[in-house]
Length: 225
Image 1 (cartoon, one colour):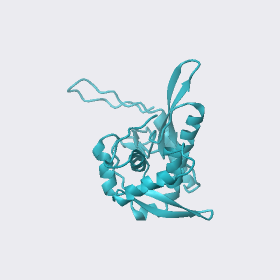
Image 2 (cartoon, rainbow, N blue to C red):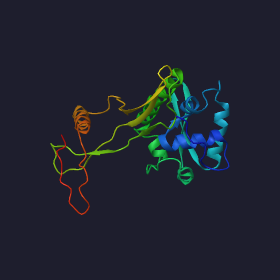
Image 3 (cartoon, one colour):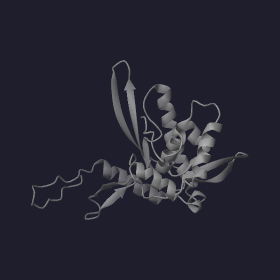
Image 4 (tube, rainbow, N blue to C red):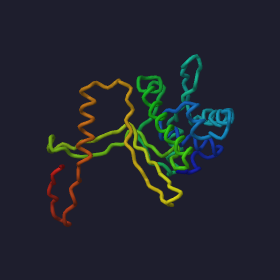
């Protein structure tokens, strides 16, 4: 899906788009940004110049990551950059803020792997003529539910990402919105934690929220099954 071309003022369109992507996905490499935002450019020099304008304006920061003998920059928004994106009012606000410590910390690989998963869907959608853009997935969105096995508790299932994908059938002239819960497995989760999350998915799948009662009346809890 197309995403809004607005954000921090005084910047080029590509820099604004990059700021939005960084705000939503927290930590993204230069190579990933190139594939997401400027795939029509053979080389990434233009994107790099735009990214440097973000850094020079104090809106973004970087840290180097060395893989396979090459160094790639990882980008994130500063507090100033996040505030600038939020002021445009075009994206759902996210309380999370990246920091140099977090960018270099143990969640670096998982964050980049989640971006890579969404990026694979974006590139496949382009190939098939479907719709899935750089802002069509959101990391770690809480989905609240209740479980019969844990009565009285307000629980939350937090997938690694929730991704929206529009499947277009040109022959039938139909467009179908598909929503996916994305889990990125890097074999870092314990078996017990994995079992808990699988149980949470099963409980959420069958969960039916209680319907609000008449005004002034107290709602009666319903079975979560």
